[in-house]
Image 1: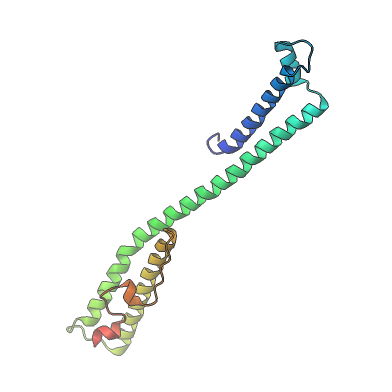
Image 2: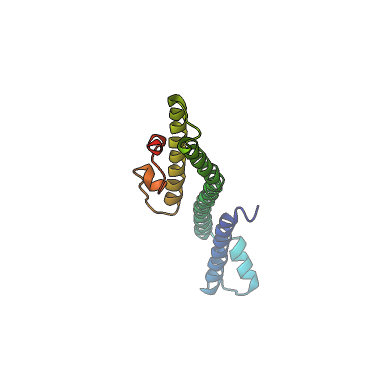
Length: 170
């Protein structure tokens, strides 16, 4: 729990530290005729109304800043988790996509497997969808890296491969 909310705890600790410094400052400037540990303890636990107000304000502000810092770090942790999830998804999707692209190209270009037009249309759809999945994963990775990658045609994604199954038949 401490590790999870460390920023808030740090803010509260900072506010309490400011409380201690303010009490020591009041003792040093001569707010009390007697000096020593007794006057410091009295100033620390029984301050006047104005000092109590300002010390509570210090404590509240430092805790509030700790809360803001905690929320910011929480969003960064969530972004890192999402980024890692996208990377794992890409690593798991790339091999099947490449196999689908290769198998569909082989099915169409192999002269021994002359398919009718409806089978070619189905293979065309499979090939185009695999290209689209590949393009989407590349775009997601490029966006994750902070790059802007514009893919306007399947040739850019799949260099050297036919853009459609019907072109492979030609």
